Image (cartoon, rainbow, N blue to C red; front, side, top):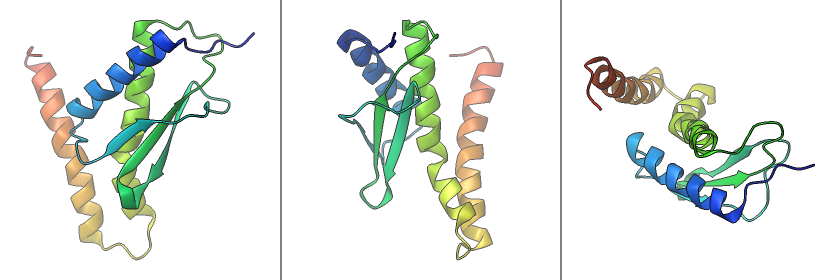
Length: 124
């Protein structure tokens, strides 16, 4: 029997997407929910880089219990794909310069450094 998020679950997921978009400094991306379900996954994300559009889809959570926590963690997972998209794109493009790759790598490092040092100092 499918374990599909309810409309209320989908709204919680959308709220988590907005939260993680802010935390991960992804304001330059438009992140929208797609109309079709994710295939063989709890959620998925597709990209239109030229439009800076990421479209997420919810799918079957299978044996995973759908809770506010599981929805939030799944939203984080999908937003991390968005966060790493530019790095992955330049790293895989043979025409990218080392400077372009390093710039994207430092974008990731700088945000992780900020988030992790904040957590290690006991602040939230």
